[in-house]
Figure 1 (cartoon, rainbow, N blue to C red):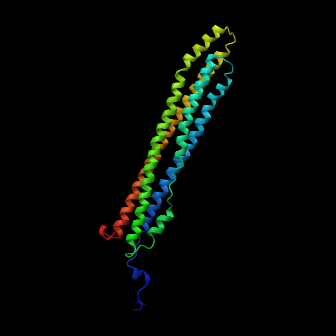
Figure 2: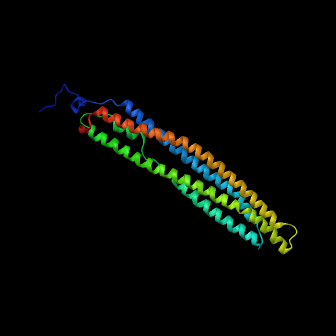
Figure 3: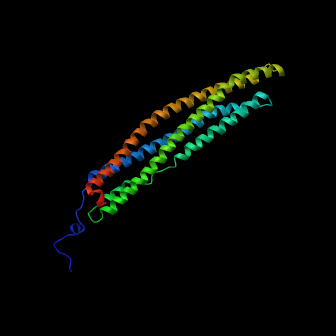
Length: 247
């Protein structure tokens, strides 16, 4: 049988659905989610950089602790432990920045363009797949944020624990100088400087952690709202193209 010359391709495939509003809501929500994630990843990288810079002051004093003195050996040991612990946590934070969302706004527009009765089931399944991918990404992302929060806390704890031991270190430096009859206070000078640098590092970590937490809360709230808007838009698409049994 010949094709009906009075029926165009769109009509033969069924009614075409206009989903411009839903497409806009989906793409805008996705863009905001990606922006929030990228912003937090950039913040993580900057945080790591500032922590490394702050630690350099402590490492510099460690290099000044030259000589076979007991206190200097303690400084070397404590500095090594601090550096190892901080670096371990920074590596975890840096690794989380590699979690990239591999969904683009064009993927959504491609799915929602030209939906008809004939292809609505297939297209909605594709949209659901995108939603599932986004949900999985969001779950992993939030888990990473929790782990990063813990890492920042452990960095602060390590710095504070190291700083709390410095009063004892300074007293041992004075004692060692008396025993060795050292009058130029070469050991005490380094011990005091080490204590001061550790105190400065603690303040740097506390300040960075406070700023990171505030900034993170703001961005995660925006990200959560965008994620909810995305899911609402998916429901709106389903409602527009037909009842559940049709899909």
